[in-house]
Length: 225
Image (cartoon, rainbow, N blue to C red; front, side):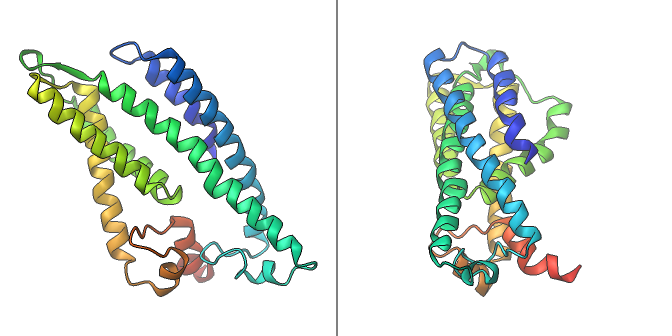
């Protein structure tokens, strides 16, 4: 849960180092919404952690969990479903939408003229793996692949648009774009690996099937320890 707390501070540092001034109203509104969403998610995660210690299984829906479906009175189950909605849906949307808005705004300023083209330094290549793994975890555990995909496609469109104007990505932009590209590859490998898992398929129906790592853990790893 530590990443819930440090994300706003990391974004503030990112904004301070932005190659150009970002719209203040958009940044402030995004930060406020992000903090509210992260707070909701943090509270939900705290409760979920206690449920996990009691035997809650993340690969099952709320009503299918053995420790939930036998609750009395039955109306308590509705309360846990409401908690799930605030934690995994509303909290995630309030957190991740402004997060990716700020990243994209930052990205739009990471372009330079062709004759001043820069390359990514060695430190950037060394940090590329951890950065991509961080975004992979956000995308899969946060169930925000659609939002991530839209942001990535917007970045690709911005790169194409800027190339027509004679500009290319600077070192910071190259690092962010490369991180997103590797993240797309990691998500594709993750989905392909678990494509035929019947239990996770039931938990995550639909064409955009991206199972959560913690669901995989409670299904395939936890009981083997």
